[in-house]
Length: 304
Image (spheres, rainbow, N blue to C red):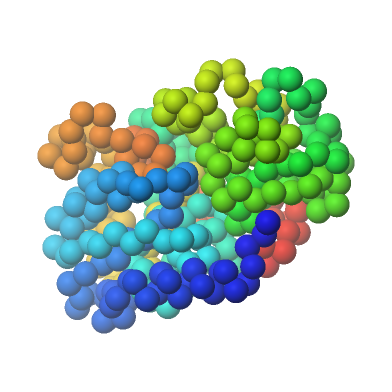
């Protein structure tokens, strides 16, 4: 079911009540604390652990305490950053564009990559069970279909564009279900709670299999999106320019497994962020114009 307006406000209130004063509240450069916020891409009780090497590196680079805030959803991150409660935010691609559309003063500077040398980007998969009889998006008419969240890029916006191109109206031709997470969407399909669904490629191809929650071949991919720009870290424009530049350089050049491991911020595989990848690569705001183009194509109300 869709998130209600009341639930969104509750999420914002919960986040803002827990953040406390941030650099933006106290004049940016004069504050001793920076707040870094993210939401889990899957059900996780250890989200902060994936970011801790980056948080520690940023603390050393800036000389400030960097406090992690796990938010309830992207609406909370957007409103928290608008209110000056969040200085550095890990967004989904769509939620970042939405934040900018809503006038939030924030700019993307680095995007997630799974492997060294990759361009920040990933794919949305349309998935089903091998015995479902579904072979493409055109076969979803009348079916119960799992999405992730109305503000999810690969879990809703790109799938909606794909459905429209296949002649399927996602509001009237299917029974939409919002599962809340990429893992929840994929697992709901595997369990038969949905006839088909959508999730990002890493969740389906590796993460759930490595965790033993899915078996290889338990799901079949019947659709693959164009490349989705990778999830960005965006820095509040309200921070003092020298501090912003320092954080930007650190995220682009040092928020990766090679640097963090070599400098004692992590050991072993050193998997970074909510996707457990290599780390981050440089991006700018224009990198997310593809999201804006999909918004124009779908005219989804979430884009407004």
